[in-house]
Image 1 (cartoon, rainbow, N blue to C red):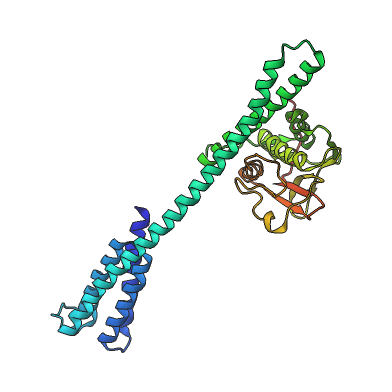
Image 2: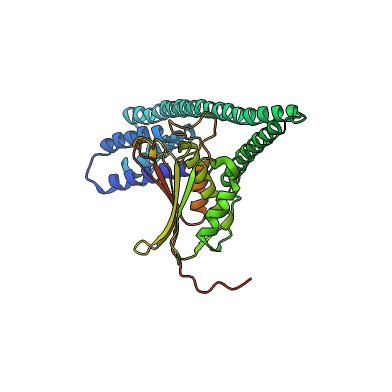
Length: 343
């Protein structure tokens, strides 16, 4: 409704501008009849059928009242003038129909794209659910085995499957909160060492085989952030790094401050295949996944991380060279911090 009202206002403004020009410029009123016609054509291609028909009415009335002699009075139009006014309405109807067809085509394209996206999401969610559920089913079926080693392996596999399910549900819920605008960050002072440690613990054994090297200098300023959101951001970045870093590889986590840009940061660097340059600008979009991503997955982890950083007044960036890994950096504004009161 608001957009349609704006279209009617656009019609009135365009007609007024043509009328003002016709009032002051030394041109024959027939010439401005053609200019009004051009305005109706342009408007009918921009606005809906209703505003386009309204443009024809307003233009014909303005031309007759303000420009056709005698001015400031409605005159009975001649045959030529009547044909021109009639043309306004024909053009408005044709243009309105064209605009409607264009709108329908665009809507059909959006619906088709939405359908493809929903199907891809459904397929991904189905895959992500079936794999850990199959592991859990197999584990429970064989837990009564008398082999202690087998039971231990099944328990470990079941724990990994549960973590995978938990991560899937958490990302879906977080994205729903973001899309609905229900996210309200609670900012407080937090220690980057605590954030990294908590994020690492939350991943359990999903980083197994990957060494984690922390490079956080002592005396680094505290971060003013939402602790829970920052832990989720770093956990998503660590998990992304673990997925792409080969077994026995190293993941590096560093933190620091940039006084010149008044920012603090935490970076996570992997030893994966890297991200193609043409993909780096889209890597934080929902459902976007790199060419080397593991089968399944929803492509929500990095999108959630970016949204969480934006909600806290920060941002996230990536630097990567193909074949040399990727470095994801979460930035927050650097704010002065006095003594933290003991709780």
